[in-house]
Image (cartoon, rainbow, N blue to C red):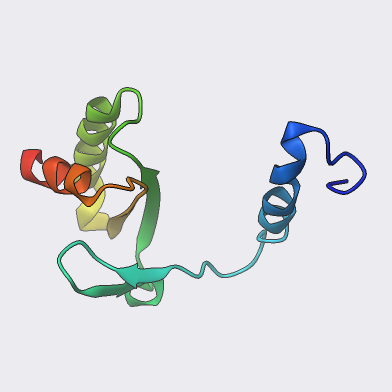
Length: 102
C-alpha cells in the first residue's frame, strides 16, 4: 500500500500501522533511561498493572491529564498500579519544567 499510494500523505504511516497490528498478543517491550539517570525495563514491573502514558507538555489539556493520573494512582497504587510516562518533548527543559511543577 505504501508503494502503490506513495503520493498519498498518509502512506508514510502504513509501516507503523502494520507494526502495531502485529503487536496483539505479544509481550510489551519497553525499556530506557529515566529522567533521574536510572534505567527502567517493563520487566521490572512484572506482576503489576502498568499504565503506559505517552505524553508531551504541549498536549492539549495536559495539566488536566496529570491530575487524572495522580487521582488514578492514588486510588489504585495499593492494588499494584504503576504508571510509566514516556515523554515525547524534544527539549529536555520542557520535561524538567513539568517535573518541577508536579
